Length: 295
Ligand SMILES: Cc1cc2nc3c(=O)[nH]c(=O)nc-3n(C[C@H](O)[C@H](O)[C@H](O)COP(=O)(O)OP(=O)(O)OC[C@H]3O[C@@H](n4cnc5c(N)ncnc54)[C@H](O)[C@@H]3O)c2cc1C
Image (tube, rainbow, N blue to C red):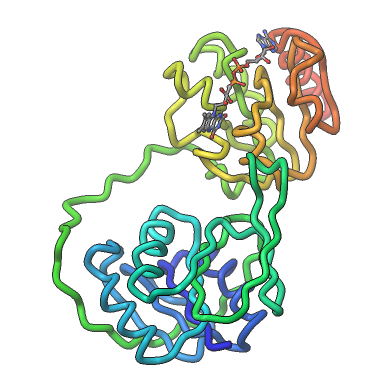
């Protein structure tokens, strides 16, 4: 199946799409958006310096029609999600978003209701546009650099004025092996210091529920869940987090969840492998001491 990947040069996101693309085609083609060195091996590699769907959508649709691509793969990033819908409309192609599973016979899975259910679909044939949910596919290792062919720039309907990097300290949540997340149960923004201490000892990152973000205790970039980051750490500590389905949607690929909550009926315990029922103000310092004692 003739496959085209459309993504930025981010090797992790691109690697996940390459893993999916290789189910259908040994060396899928790629359109790399924006700047940055493209790594990996592809049939054909194109570059579009812009990332805004309004500017590049029609040029990409022309390429897809001209080359006869049957499967178009994007990621569920802001760029991929923004581009996929308009692209499908201009191609008159069906679209499935937030895909979590896919087989070569075009059986496709998506998670529903905050990962409480899985829906399975059978697609008859292409062309088909898919956005692939982050962290559900092992990223292919992309080696070597590739020469790209520039695609003609379309009319600039929207100009990007500037990109301001999110202020971030330490390990990015998406890459962290250990995450210590605080929820509304933490009580104040200052109390997150203790979670920072614990995460520091575990060489991990600190996340937040939307409850904690809504309180203004943590920045929106720290939010984990359906409308936040999707993470897949080996160990996920949920501290003072109730475990709403929208939060659980962001941690469905966490290997081991440890919950600390004073309410023994909190929903988070249903997802947790280990649980501590009690006040985090006692449990977290005890864990910190144990970590220090054991080096
Ligand atoms: C469309 C939509 C999208 C959403 N997206 C997200 C999302 O991406 N991420 C997300 O997290 N939420 C999301 N939500 C919100 C979600 O439904 C919950 O409201 C939110 O997750 C609750 O945050 P919380 O668990 O921190 O707070 P709460 O529900 O208030 O829970 C606080 C918990 O802390 C415990 N607690 C209190 N004090 C202590 C203590 N001293 N020690 C130990 N435990 C204590 C309590 O028992 C309670 O379980 C979304 C909602 C909607 C409608």
